[in-house]
Length: 246
Image (cartoon, rainbow, N blue to C red):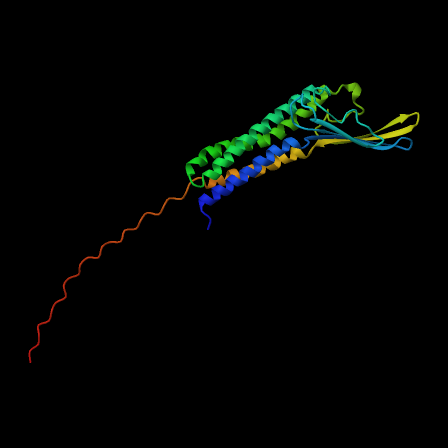
């Protein structure tokens, strides 16, 4: 049967996996906006814009790709250059929270694994991991709650092809048809969270599992009290029979 020492080691390893997963979310898109156009005259095309957490001035936090007849105004840019200043603040906040969550989770994982030999280290490990768990779930929740409002401020009404979009909801879709001299053009818009947003929630679950193990097995069971064996008491001397004479 596994001891509490081994279980604390496993808990620390699980926390380490969760912390690594949390920092990996920085390099994965957190939001995706896609526009598909189709017409009998122009053909079809798709434009996809991926947004990453990062500093507002960091180039590459917004990346665009296209296919078919569609084209991108840029291959990559920053929130500041794209005039997404309010969205950039949210991206920066999420970036900082992810970094802090990773650092605390990583240190907590090291202390958790070290508590295998010293259960006194489990207390500081648990405190750090609790904060990392909170940050792992607060970051995507805050991102979801504040992004539509920031997009509404950054995208003027004149630039919105439809009434609904990222400025009105965190995820959704919309279709519209434009009439041009060359014929009708159908536009299908989709927007919503990218893989990085979901990875943060997965990291939260993994960190939580590691935290539960550290909490449950933070102490070693008490050593069994030594059982003293009473010394044997000297027995009464056996009576000796008198010698029998013939």
